[in-house]
Length: 279
Image (tube, rainbow, N blue to C red):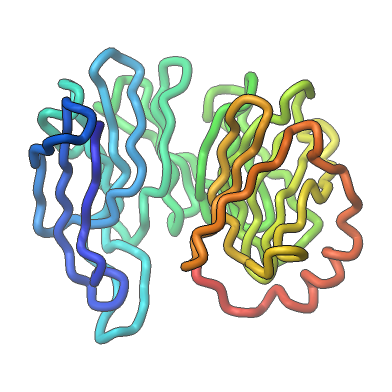
């Protein structure tokens, strides 16, 4: 098990320092295996294409200043381990202000999203070299559903059917929402759900073939929360987690995922889309 730790003052004061801890006894003891005083924002670990290969999306520098909140590192960084997390080295540095937000190893390729660069970096040689593919909107989380790669963005998702070489956009009819964590809808062909947060917290259902969008669940309607961001599928249930202080975890049966019209939320979105957000 691995744990990335960075200074909580980063968001307000730009205080850096990223450590990676590793345990081999189910968390009873931990060993620090990496530290870099200039790095931060080590958020997402993911497995590589080879045995014992791991990656961590991170950043260097940047952050807030004088109490003013900011989220973006000065440089996006990917760390790589080839020995199950015992040692780490940099394999990608996106040399401009951006967060390397999420990553996946899929069918021989490694892909990571660079949020502020609005792009995806792709490697076909296990992180030795990278090619950048530009999107037109911020690149957030990435996932694989069937034969498709999905990158979530702001009121849109990008879809690739050729392993990340080219991308096409499916735009949501509702404005002002940040989409994350694409998951395939069980029992369907080409349908996904994504969490959507901003002026409201929704679970959106998308038919990728027809670019039809539906409301699968409206969490704000009964939780009064606009932060149900985290999303995971386990068995016959979808779990949605609140990133705010409430820490609410919702469980939704997959056979209860709705296909409600987006028309009412579409009107609200146009009215509220310009409100400031923190994602």
